[in-house]
Length: 534
Picture 1: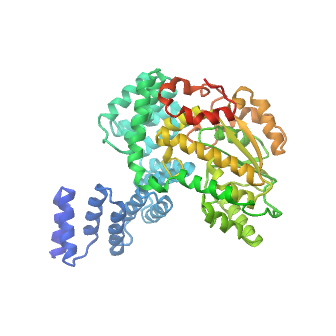
Picture 2: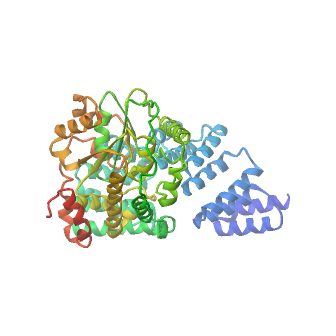
Picture 3: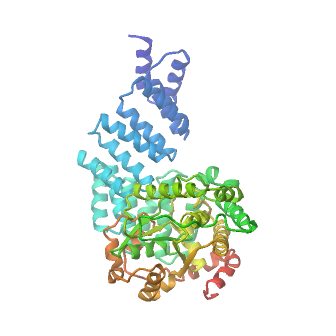
């Protein structure tokens, strides 16, 4: 038996990740090579949340054994931890080509699709895992959670209970069951499940944050608003600590918003004179935007119910273009130097991106719903001067409360919603940016209040149709039934599958005490949009 063989066996028998790492490190320092050495080091690094270093170790192992499906699976997991979903999916696909019958790899691929917002693909991967292994608890629980988010509670309960049979007290299955309880109004039952779960979860991780947010919803449902707000705050504090290094400090989006406002205000003219737009695949082009939680998902679903409309929900269609999202003076200057050829090429890239996300705009009225496309309004004005802009507004106090409450994916555009003060400051900046863009750019815009849509649905929807220049369709009245069959990316998915409801109007009053520190800063926008002061 060679020295390498002895050390590989020692790693396998170590029974302790630290000990295995020490053996592997000593072996590598001696110049010995074996995939197990790099794999042991990668495992130790992952336990320390040093995922970038772990990825390098796994790649070194893969060089030594390139057709190892388990290594490729581990590489995919590491990439997923690093928020590199596309590359993770590619790694899982490579593993599946080698070992197509391994259910766990399909499950992990589903997680990667879910992380990138590709919900239909995520469901297919999880279903494939279950087809290969009917008692795969993680895949069953993932499907249960997806069904619960969509309001399909009987299906969610059946899947979650099946997962719990395979793995008692399965964390995701418990969360799915709690979501079902909340959907059914069984707030105390949800609270009991979640309190039990929280006692066995780590102190600070994503799952604990999610469970705290759901516990807060259960407390809110019992009208225990002080306790609910405390739980919402604890949830957000965990997420803020997890993501501060990436999205906090000078890199905050609110800083970029201020830079773009200043750059627009200093320019004597708009960033670029709108050229005559070349023929586009869509008959009409509509951008649906506004601040998060302002009703954009509801309006997108109403549009989607129209037979002549194609919609696209919350995709990064402008990400491939070479102009930064909010580039301030530098970005506007770069945009101002684009030739008609540059604009034409950018439009082609845009429509390629639209199609890559599965949308088919040809011959349709194309509606792109992306709330924070407000950051791209200078680019939209340059590329699509004839586009229609539907800008949703909602009582700012309800907007901030809803953003603070909901478990939104944490990314640059949402990080500042984790504290009330940051959220209010961010909201003010985005609203001022929208005002400056309306004043300085050639935009054809329509401002729609969420509350008007709820209280006078048909009248408001007909006004939107007139603005867009599209015929009314009675199918828009049944948007909730159409939404039942659609995969909806937004956190509002279960809400828009219901018929219209007014419970979301004026929710801020129940939390007026907790919101009091930020109400003065929101007051100008409350007055500007015509909402009552109390």
